[in-house]
Picture (tube, rainbow, N blue to C red):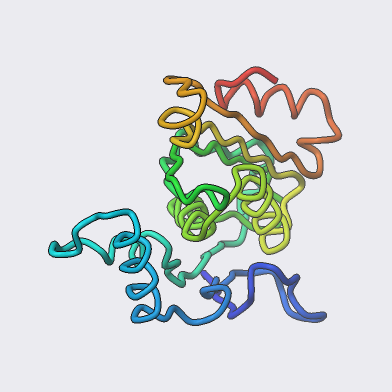
Length: 205
């Protein structure tokens, strides 16, 4: 039977509460759309950009994380091999330049007592991507959240992304990609598990 618990992604479950599932709520202060629109209007007007058009709410949609339930199930079959979801698309905004960056996430774990609904790995990525980010922090947040609330024997995340702050400004290095990884537990400590993870993810280990 699936279980669902109301927990914050930055916290470990309280003592005595099983790591069965996780309801990930929106982080930070409530969104003030009116204030955001005023600030965006002032910014665009200062740059001489016309405000007589629709579409100024795009950032509100882009940067609004949706709560969801990270549903897990008992590992009744005792499956103990690597589970990996490859090429999960994501997009977010660079917190330094407020320009988008996007790419794919490869997320894997070595099950212990529970397994996770695979679609939730994509939702987990979407949730943490829905705020201004750095790629390094986003990688670690996904790995830490999966580790804290699923309690696998190991967890690993690799992100491959193209940053428009690199490709559309400054050096304008079109086609350049940035790769980051976060490995926990056996996927970090055991060379064979680490190599298998990178091989299945399709990136050099």
